[in-house]
Amino acid sequence: MKYNPDQYIYLDWGWGEINATLAFTWLVMALLAGGSWFISRRLSSTTSISGWQNLLEVIVKGINDHIEEVTHRDPGPFLPLIGTLFLFILVSNILSIVPFFQPPTGSLSTTAAYAVVVFLAVPVFGLSTQSPASYLKQYIQPTPLMLPFNLLGDFTRTFALAVRLYGNVMSSTVIILVLVVIVPLVIPVIMQLLGLLTGIIQAYIFALLAAVYIASAMKKTEKENNKSFKGGST
Amino acid sequence: MTSLDIIGFGSVLGAGLAIGFGAIGAAIGEGMAAAAALRSMAQQPDQTSTFTRTMFVSMAMIESTSIYAFVIAMILIFANPIWNHAVKASGG
Image (tube, rainbow over all chains, first blue to last red; front, side, top):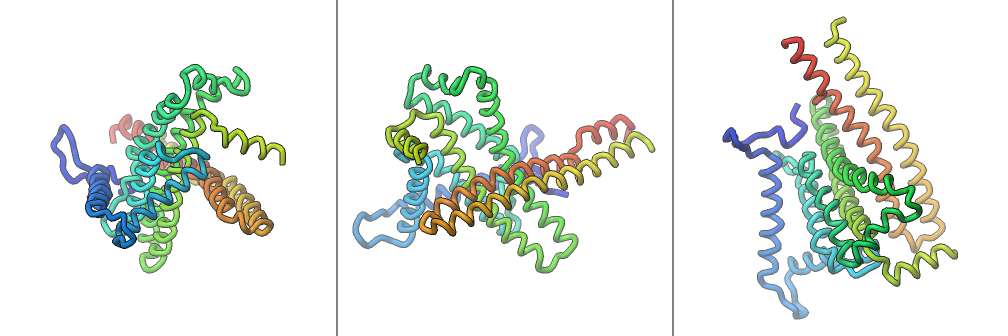
């Protein structure tokens, strides 16, 4: 049973191979990059804008607002990383209803790579706002006794991020494969719809958790301090 | 029973137990999360969007535990390293 896009091999040269994960990753990348290039070729700042530009503006504005709501800080620096992760995972999960499309997020290699990107982005963003000393101080935050657990948490949450996305996308593929064998008529479509919903939510969750992890390593803003104070008093 | 039989039996049984027991906790937890979110939404309807977002995030976190169980079950059935080793050792 082929439940993993790594198992579909299109080209094999002995020293390397092109499997479905690689092929469809590049397809989604081409779709996203080509689409945005095509739309942003003729941008207008007047009151009459094309429908496509409107769509892009809604997407970017929506991601921006969400990042700001979640992290309580300027979304500017987050947008390129979080937005890219979100759009890529979203598009590859949505396209999984297209026949013969294998979602690249259903491969542990893809999701592990994204989780590693988030894992590396945490210290990069954290050190951009504060000194190394105060960044490292977070690891002994409540007491120095918590140091091993804080360190362990960094790795387990990366692992969890990868396995969560992989498991969700892979499980919907497997359920459909099993159902096609048992009841091939209508039921797989319903499960595919459910898989679509799960895929969209997982894209959102992945981006949101990445934003939360990155923001938690950054220096606390004035706004955030006030917020936590207010939250504690009520 | 040969050792191969025992490993196969154990893997399938273990996969069933893993996903079965793994789903219980997540199901109870998700039910409690949904109930709490619905109660909060009924009390403060204008905060619904915040509650929905937080609920989805927490549900995905809760659900990931059962997804781990599912991944373990899939490994036991389809990519079991002990099984592969036993098959190789028995010369199959």
